Length: 310
Image (cartoon, rainbow, N blue to C red):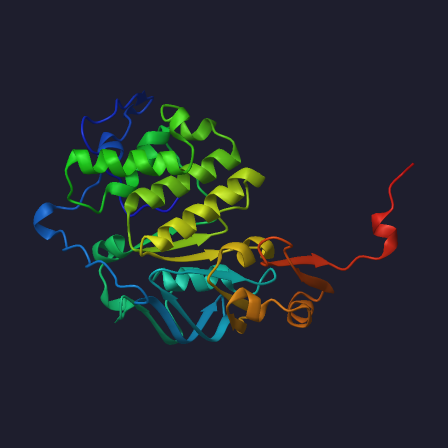
């Protein structure tokens, strides 16, 4: 799991011992930044402010060019979905927008400033990142994991408690706050990891496949949370494989293919059967939802695929 530090508020939770002695009590209670060196929090963004931008971005990994001249923007008040086939560069682009990968060419700007000029402490106040996997080496409880999101902030214990409680409620993990993170199912871990990101309360959320391990109900819940955060003024960038979710919840979509942006715009503009068939190399059909009008995307199948046994 990504960690910009770990923090607590109020009375620290009990930290059970391991065979090696105290269980990293400092990590559980918070590797907080030294108050004197803590940067000032960013001002609240105005609707439409560009909080993350890639301009002419090229990224090379292992000698291979993974992103090629990518241009995208993430604006306050919007959900931007990154979609595309496997290997298209979605997760690489998200990592670059998080300032976790260096650009070979081009530039990534966060809050109007080149990403390389922000310190780690400043970045932790400005963006929160949800990676694909959420693994921990120590038996933290669910609540302790969520509290890690509060590390960058110099708020009161009451503020921390409120942020942690709201994040756990939003992701429906409050009921198992005292359980060990390691004992959870994959879907439960994914929701706890998202709760940590929400508790961080950064104005830019970068989420890599947050619905991959979730059931139908919790997929919808996570995307509703994304919309709620955007409505509250945040910028949300989310990697999705489910095009129906992207069409229903994203304000804008960037379709990646072979390291480039094949299309960028509102779902209704870019989700066409011709473009999606070309990008995914799979014939698809696009038709409007009968009630909402949002695009529904299904693969074209021959009649034999629909046959059922007697």
